[in-house]
Amino acid sequence: MRIKFLTLKRKSILIVMLCVLLVGGMCGTFFAVRATSSPKPLHTIVIDAGHGGKDGGAVGRTTGITESELNLKYSLVLKNICQQYGFNVVLTRSDMNGLYSPFASNKKRSEMEKRKEIIDKVKPDLVVSIHMNSFTSSSAKGAQVFYADGSQSGEALAQSVQTNLFKTTENARKTAKIGDYYILNCTSVASILVECGYLTNPDEEVLLQQEKYINDFCYNLFCGVLLYFGM
Ligand SMILES: [Zn+2]
Image (cartoon, rainbow, N blue to C red; front, side, top):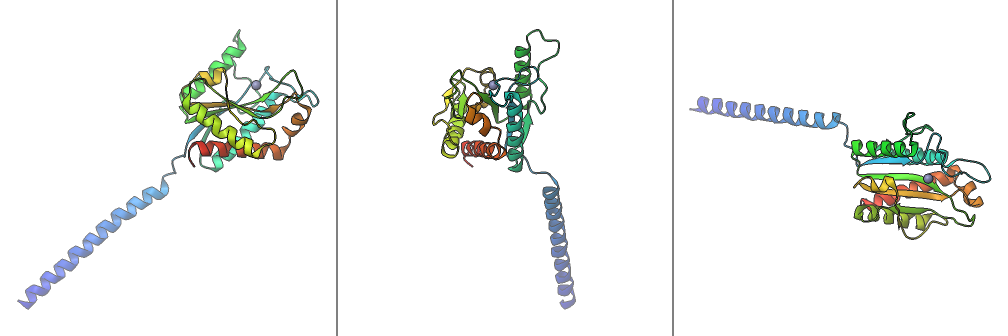
């Protein structure tokens, strides 16, 4: 009897050990898979640098800088910040070339359709279009965020970014505005158009080109995006 009992006990221990090894192996495989698979990006954002190519947009009166050049600069800085925080970023343009087809008779229409095509393909969580403003009077100043009429998500995003810019950036306006722009109207994705400042204002023309100002502005714009996501 004693021998039989010991044999049974030995068998039980063996079964328990096998189970531990089996479960351990499964867990090991599970954690190995978890560790090797890359983390899913937090959100996907399309950053749209306005203008490009032959279309330089607004021009600085003193320095002659073009809006298309500054738009690209801000877009690239914003892209780096977004990526640092785990966002997936797609740029509509990453150089000074225009987005229009060289064969298009209406280049403006062609480039806008290309921007829409990119947004439709990427299906992002949001779109941020970067521009620099201009006005006949040189006294006009301050960053202004626009959203499409009737877009609740666009309005929430715009107000979140505008409020954060107002709190952190000199001259920034307090309230986001409705804007009738193709880039906002072409999609149901939460979209904003950010006029970062006025190239027709001599002080802002200089300020908008300063590296520290660009970094701070893009960071504060991004913080507004984070607030929109409740982060
Ligand atoms: Zn523009």
